[in-house]
Amino acid sequence: MGKKIYAVLNGKKTGLFDTWAECQKQVIGFSKAKYKSFPNTKEGIKKAKDYLKPEDKTDLKGDKTTIADTVHKRSIELSKEDKHIVVYVDGSYGKIKNDEGNEIKVVTGGAIFVKNGEIIDRLYAISEDQDMAQMQNVAGEILSSVRAIDHIIKNKIKYEKMTIIYDYQGIEKWATGEWKRKKIYTEKYHNYVNNMMKKIKIDFIHCPGHKGNIYNEEADRLAGYAKDCYKENSKVDMEYFLENISVV
Image 1 (cartoon, rainbow, N blue to C red):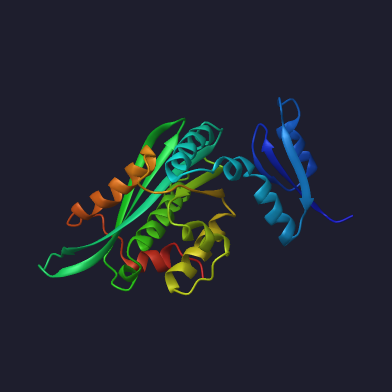
Image 2: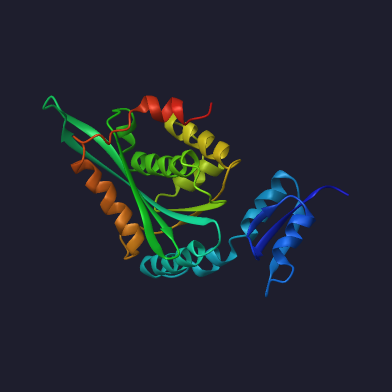
């Protein structure tokens, strides 16, 4: 019989587990536990990950405002799980004057960290890389996602799982490989996220932007605010992005 993996939807801890013994620890004695086994193959792992997000898929129906509200409620629930952090990310783009007085393009990102239904941290970043600026807001959302993961890992914050909530679909689809990566930044992003998934479980949820989700709106506001902080020591050069935290 081939090896299996176990997906725990409702339990003491949720996620994928490599052995039945690990799965049992999460479901025995837990009221209304839900779990399922899958073949430990590429297709089986994909199905297991899909199984873990049925509420997200069934709940996210209706107009965008309703979806945004549903995501808000779901994110609060997730943020209350043990050792689970929720991060809302967003990006922005604009033209500003640099220290020499020349007009340049910049991309900015904002990340909002939510735990137990409360904002516990904020992070923003700026890049003046002109090639990256061609991707406009999307580049900022990539930047904020990477910096959020980097913040958790490098500061050794003791979370076992993080859920990134985004409004641009590529944040998830480039990370999972569902979309082809045609630019160096999307390829580096894909490689980085997949490497970090060896250290922390990372899930993704889509939230329509500008539809009243207060955490999404705050991430958007923070990304815009970052442009005002350009002259402060908040810039992230691409040497850092491409070499220090990327994996070839």
